[in-house]
Image (cartoon, rainbow, N blue to C red):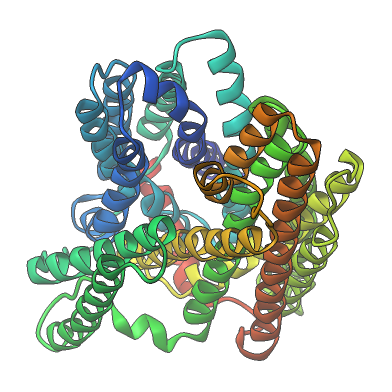
Length: 526
């Protein structure tokens, strides 16, 4: 491997660090909310905006961030975004008011919105179709590793330091990523600099923000909430208008989103399938920490540690999946032959493994052992490791060097919205089933309302009353709700497996164009 080729793989580590720090910030804040409520005198509404400000800005800025990378240079925009993320992390850590923290979280989301798609967008430019599955495995692996690591690291920091430390952990990682990206990552941009589609940016940002906010509000206040419904309808209407606008713009200039990408079965179904898995996975990551903490009585650190088998299974799946995607030599010894196992088979097998793991998890009881949870977590991780890089490769393989930034932003935006909807919908399922399993006729009205609010409130009421019967009922009702949610997630994963088998192409797009892109990147790097 030549020097430029070696630098590409070192640059991949820098990209993995960049997405790792964004993933950590998605999970670590939840642990600090009780402390923030006390120290910053934050209301319930403030606590919701600590989380939602970050999510909503990401939704609003994802698509234009991809376009900025295509126009001004993906390395340049990624460096600016990393620096912004680091500065915003410091601002979050030293915020002295709820309003200040909300503003800092919004700026943090602005940086994250560019880091996520641009870390994917450079992969089709830097790596050949033969190398790309391993590169994708490295970046996606870092994202999934961050989810359980966030609670573990955050729990340890909150036990030993003040709440601002959960934001300051971003800073050293960002510094390393900044240096590595600056030194190792080759610059790439579209040869034909796309014009800025101002109207498209405005319409898409309004649509994605409206839909995301409506879903979040529905998850908090119920799906019958008038404001939530109105905001979701407005968001969908804006996104429909955005599609019509992009069709019009594509005939006479540079659209924000190249809608012809959806003519590629690999891009369309790779994006849909990764979105479905994000939907199901975030339900699991939302519910199981509550199970470990409120039913099993563990702290945040202990809860995070028990998610580690999923990382172990995922690492094994990434290794196996990457090797199975390695291409045999073509007849005559030339590179570029068929992969040992095609993408359709790998994705289908991976999603079936995820479905099996979730279905087994659906038999979890109040007193299930840690070993039982570790087993089905590992199976889910194995399925993720096998399937996700292959599905992402199918989507990314359709992207040209010209519009890889905007194309990656579409993939990221759909996954982000899918995860948000997943948390809201599956959270509603848990709440409904949990409340249906409670018989609170003997409790005073105020205490009964507290028990219905959440499992944490229910456990607290039962412990204050010293009632083992109430405590057992609350925990049993919640575990049944989690089981129903896991079965629903298993159904989603199984449906994704069927869709992959029916519609996903056998191999990702690529070929000579991909090899030419990498030669160009090598020349820039030298």
